[in-house]
Every structure is written in C-alpha cells, then in structure tokens.
Amino acid sequence: MDDLRAALIELHAGLDRQGPGDEAFSRRMLSLLPRLPAHPRIADLGCGSGAGVLLLAEWSGARVTAVDSCDAFLAQLRRDAQACGLADRVRIVEADMGALDWPEASLDLLWSEGAAYNLTFAGALEAWRPLLDTGGVAVVSELSWFTDNPPAPLRAYWEAAYPAIGSEAENAARAAERGFEMLGIHRLPEAAWTRNYYGPLLERIETLRPTASEALLQVIRETEEEIRMFREYAGKYGYAFYLMRAV
Image 1: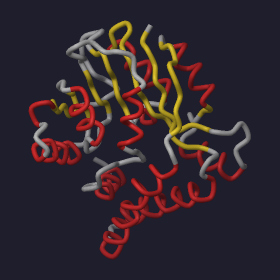
Image 2 (image 1 turned 90 degrees about the vertical axis):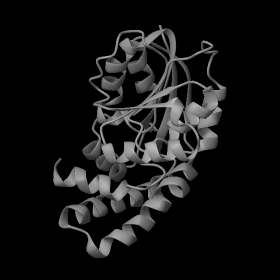
Image 3 (image 1 turned 60 degrees about the vertical axis):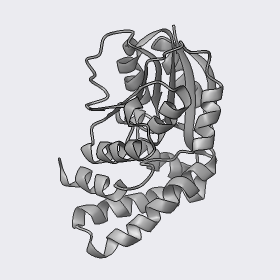
Image 4 (image 1 turned 30 degrees about the horizontal axis):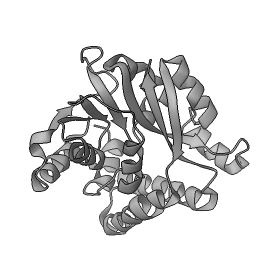
C-alpha cells in the first residue's frame, strides 16, 4: 500500500461514511425500485465501512454481500453488523470490485455509493453489467455536473482530479451503451455532503493534524481544497444516483 493511500484510509477510518450520503435519501431510493424477487441477491460494491450494507440488510431481510478492498473499513463493518444484530445478513468479501469473478447473472440488486469513480462510471457499468440478471436493478452514485457551463475554476479542478466527470445526460448515455435502462436520476442533497460527510471529516482532520505524517498532511490539504470547492460551487456539481435496470 503506498503512503498516500494509507494516509487516505487513516483519514477516513472510524467515520460512519467515506463519502457523501444520507440514510433518508437512500431509503427514498429503495422505495423507488421496481419489485425484487422474494429472496433477492444483493451486493454493495465499494461499500467502505458499510452504512449502505446495513441499510440494505435491514430493508430487504436478505443477505447482502459487501465488497471492498480495504480491510480496515471491512473490520469496522463487521463490528457494526454484530452490534446491530445484522451479522448473519452480511457477507463480507475483501476484493477488487472491478475484477470480481462471480458467475454471470448472479445479482438482483447492485448498490454502489461514491465508489464507481475508481473505475469511472462507464468502466464500472462495463464491469458490473454481467453480474446482474436480466431485469436486475443497479443503484450507482456518480460525481456529475449539474450545469452545462461549470465555472472555469471548478471545471479545471475536477477535470484534473477526475477527468471522466460527465453530465447527467452523458452518464445516462453511457449507461444505455452498456446495457442499462435508466429508471431515474436523483441528486444527493447538499446536506449529505456538508453535515454527514465533510463535518465529521473536518473534525477528524483537526484531531490528526498535530501528529500527521507528510503523506497525511498532503491528503489533508487536498481534502480541504475539495471542501472549499464544494462550499463555493455547491449546486454546480454533486453526486447523482442513477437507478437502472439491466436489459
């Protein structure tokens, strides 16, 4: 593990979320899904410490496969699942979410919050479409432009940080090209960033800063710049949740 990745994990360790999210919003997304089989096969890919996994397990009553490549986040999920009485509904898999050797058509619901960017949205859908049974549902969030004309500083920032960023229309087209019917696109509210993610993250930064390594200080500086951009340009971009059916 390189120093920067280790520092990024250290910064996020112990937090409820490793990215923006909101339980009430996620429940709303679940309420919009088409009917699933009586015993759905569900996976959360790039699950982090598992806020989505625990929600899916509680909501569905089914066993949820939780996939992430970070053992520290999965250890936190294991503890939390035990604490809330859901350990028997959570199957933990430490693996590369982009290279799963699972059988084709082995899932009815694929969930992924804030993780697809590691593969790019198009790359994630390309890798994950074979895992879904025909008619299966994918709920995938992706960093997206909410305007056709982002301010120049914002565009420059994100095209350097994430060159694959696209508009909601562009991402809908990418999904269609990879075997998905779009059922809906829903924007994660601003509070899911500021209250649920950046707030706890800033508190952790202040705890870690005094004794931080040079790698961690670099990650902190980059994180603070990301937060500054969001505060200045909220509403111009954010996470959109793409609700899709495999066709």
